[in-house]
Length: 221
Image 1 (cartoon, rainbow, N blue to C red):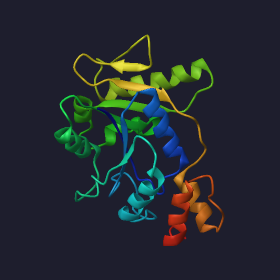
Image 2: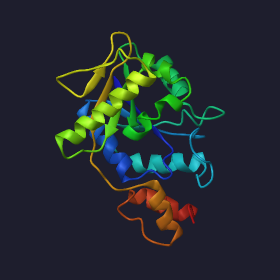
Image 3: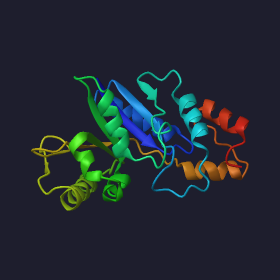
């Protein structure tokens, strides 16, 4: 089993999240993508964040009938802030012997990885898939790779090196860090919440099942 762990606040989950998850699953031949809503996001102001159970319900509604998508409440089962290092450790305890985990993370979040709890331990335990937006030009893509390489060398270990044949950083004793482009969709949860507060439609920005749930629950008004 090749399992991708895709965590987030999902406040609310939207089409951009789902499209990125699908593209990563296909690009890396993952058996499953586990969508993991954060119970208490450690890097975000709690103001304006819907209750964790409601965000979980929205992710479940969004992933309904989507092949290869699994919704996990693992972070809602723990007390305190939702740290990725704890989630990865929990998955590793239940992982089949032939299983492999991949931590899926956005490029901007990866550049802040040094602010995460026990972040160096993650590079010992799980392979990374870093999602970046298409640069359009070769030099733009090269600049993104340079930024990620700089982050690895400065905050993790100078032993990381770029593989020539594919966009991946490897290390002799730590886990690899792959980089993949995902479709640029100009959708943000912040914008969706603003539209709802203004009484405007969010159709096509979120799945219809999520839009219906938000309407029924009166969220973000």
